[in-house]
Image 1 (tube, protein in one colour):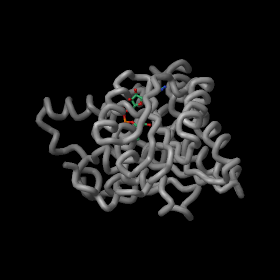
Image 2: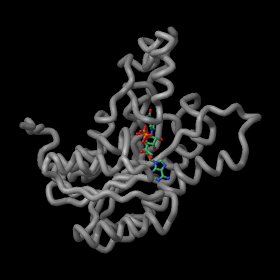
Image 3: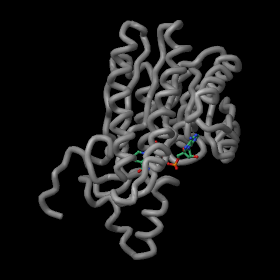
Length: 266
Ligand code: NAD
């Protein structure tokens, strides 16, 4: 039997949530936590493994639907949001989380095509989810949109330059959209994760384990460890819930203190 978690139980009771990038990592953990908190979840990913996220939710008697599609195409995200409204009656929460890293490519090897690929998924895909979530939320005068940015959008050094630029763009998108949605009753915020062990960062962890340097991972932040997807999902849950009713237009680092610290001792 699952032991009820008072921090999660009932926080999204009766709400409908869409999560993009829900097949893996942060999106998967968030879809599961949203369902545990009482939401009906539409889990979208271009990877078919999103069916497994939905199967996990249903096994715990949650309500969920899987959509396999590319969130960077406007027709896909628009149809997914309409499908959520058709199936469950409304959309209360949109977690625009899908993203790719694009790798650490040296400046002289970066191409416009590489930049365009990263920006299309990380920034334009996020914008499209924001646009269509707002389309169905504003007539009801309520809703919470959450976007996954990154500490790489706040500081240099955490990713490749197209990745960092895309995440700085997501933060700017959130700030400007909060203003554009003035008076609509819809809130929008960003989460800026630090280093989290997920599908995206698996190569970093695998390489470090192979070299025997995995005890050094996460040592740059004051908590001196990498984060787990659930630690981002809990922040997403708070922002999605009515507990965050006066929280709007912000970008929150959830990074073990990385972005607030200036290590003077390596
Ligand atoms: P992940 O690779 O485990 O999950 C990302 C998911 O997004 C995958 O399932 C992938 O299939 C999906 N996806 C990618 N492009 C898509 C598209 N066009 N359409 C639909 N689905 C798509 O990685 P993660 O770390 O959980 O990443 C989630 C978000 O967190 C990303 O936006 C990432 O940039 C951000 N982030 C991650 C870290 C970290 O350390 N892991 C740090 C900061 C920010």
